[in-house]
Amino acid sequence: MSMKRYELTKEQWERIKPLLPPEETGKRGHPRKDNRIMLNGMLWIVRSGAQWRELPETYGPWQSIYARFAKWRNEGTLEAVFHTLSADADMRT
Figure 1 (cartoon, rainbow, N blue to C red):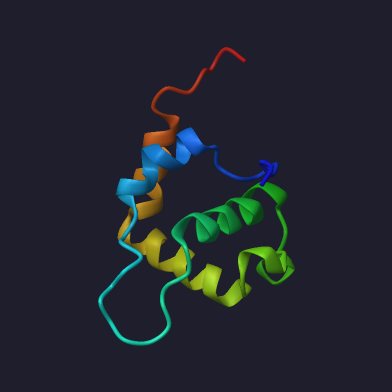
Figure 2: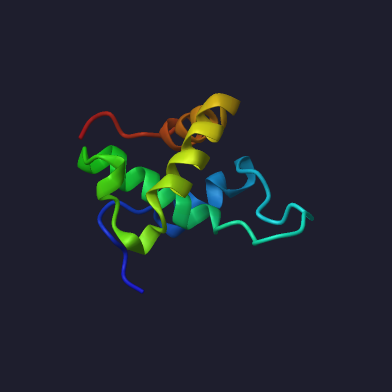
């Protein structure tokens, strides 16, 4: 699979993976969608400037991605991810 323009690199993913809630909740029902796919969908929205309804089907239903976005936003998860990835940003280029 090739790297898509708006998606996290393997190195970035490995750094933030521990910050995200576990995918296995131990609850019955449908298993949760992969955190990396969901986060890449969120990044697509943020970086493209598109509306949630325009999210490509590759990432799953926009409602699911938005629900997880809102949950992670409210819990501070996205802020922790931002700080982790921006800690060693190269501000010269």
